[in-house]
Length: 127
Image 1 (cartoon, rainbow, N blue to C red):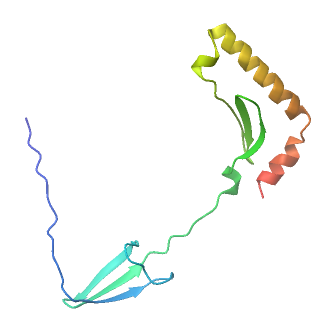
Image 2 (image 1 turned 120 degrees about the horizontal axis):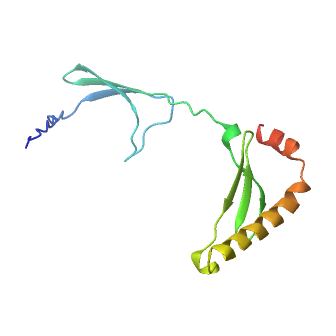
Image 3 (image 1 turned 180 degrees about the horizontal axis):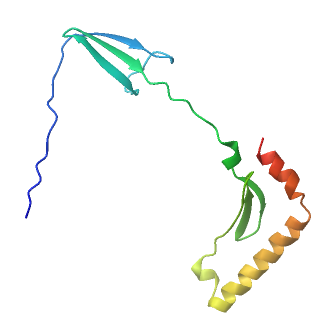
């Protein structure tokens, strides 16, 4: 049996150091953490440069609710249609009963979707 050895990081404490912080955001608050690079200048001086993390929005992935029924919902984004059904086990007796419930849900959602202009809705999702 092989024994794994673990390597622990050495802990070093620097009492009273001068830390220069470069950050595009406001002053750091108590208990808050930031990602970045800490540079060791000398024993008494450090320099921290906060990493700039850009958020890239993806509106084409945002789901928009088109229609819903008692057990189902239809969502759309600029690329896809997603249909979900949630039915509790207590609500159906057997497979045949479940199939009937799904058929009723699909019929209800289908009637509502027939009235919609889905191309127009997809264009709205892309904006």
